[in-house]
Amino acid sequence: MPQFNYVSLSKDGRQISGIMASPSRDEAISELRKNGGRPLLLREVGTKKQRMSFKNKVKIKDLVVFSRELSTMISAGVPLPKSLETLAEQAENKYFKEVVSNINHDVESGIALGDAMAKHPKVFSEVYVNMVRAGEAGGILDDIMKRLATQVEKDASIRHKVKGAMAYPLVILSITVLAFFLIMLVIMPKISKIITDLGGPDAQLPIYTRVMIGISGFLQHNIVFILIGVVVAAFLLRRYINTEKGKYRFHSFLLRTPIIGKVISKIVIARFARTFSSLMGAGVSVLDSLEITGKAVGNRVIQKELEGVAKNVRNGQPLGKQLLASQYFPPIVGQMMEVGEETGKIDEILVKVADFYEEEVDTVIEGLASIIEPLMIVVLGSLVGMIAASVMGPIAGLSKQIGD
View 1 (cartoon, rainbow, N blue to C red):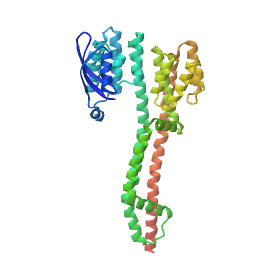
View 2 (spheres, helix red, strand yellow; view 1 turned 90 degrees about the vertical axis):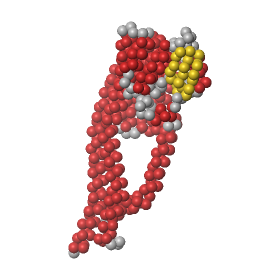
View 3 (cartoon, rainbow, N blue to C red; view 1 turned 135 degrees about the horizontal axis):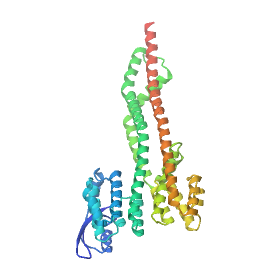
View 4 (cartoon, helix red, strand yellow; view 1 turned 90 degrees about the horizontal axis):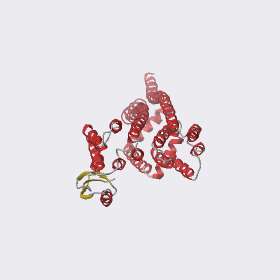
């Protein structure tokens, strides 16, 4: 979404400046006027350059510290503009400092904190913004900021564990692929020449040796076309996955994939339980919570499932019963939701569900890592062994024939 530098005159005659995100220039002007300002200057920021910069990113740690400190300052009775000003001054990340300063300018000009944060979607997610809005409406912004800090930490922790578990297998896989191409393109042609020189063009070679030599020859003559094909295929696949239809099918495929689907399912359920719990605890309605949570779970298939659940809940069906009928949510989630509906403690019960599934994710990821690592080593060892056998066997046989 385009971003605009603006200078506006507030109702009391003060000049306010900042950066805002808006679909177009006209809508940006309309939004400024709607908030009681009179635009004096509006200039689009070079967003393409910004997107290429790695500096324009906010670390999870910065967002967690911001949430906790803002909660503490609000609890202590510090006015919101003064709190934001202080947090902007002490922010180490220059981009985040600029974002918080712009939010402070908007708040000082009369814009609600949630609406001001919504202008920076790269920093504050839709869930974050809606929870802040709910906190402002219910007068419990300090409590909401504490919940947000915890939720951001939990989400970051799960992502970190998944990346950590997959890092070693991906490194081994990359080394295996590079080693294969290096052997096929550099070493195998030389060894093939040695074998041909020793035994002549009509030498009887084992079938696995002939296969390796054939693969080597094919790669040598077609490597450029293969690389171009891989790049084009990867580009087209990524482009297709970025479409709504492609993303839905890709997410559906992931859920059906053995082992990986199990991990993703548990991550999604944990994220659903914690996000829905936080929204309900903030006073957001069940239907709004379902809509926001569906967009936050990170899987289009389950998002569509939650949209259907929300439709049935709107028609008077109990939420717990709908989750029990879902093919993606385990029975325990629906049963716990029914207990929460009966006791009026949905948020407290779902926190326990989230904790349980986050522990399950940890267990599954640890088990997955312990299986994948030796498996990749076996694959790499088998590849090297097969190549060695296809080379050393014929050379030894031909050498023996020559000796005889």
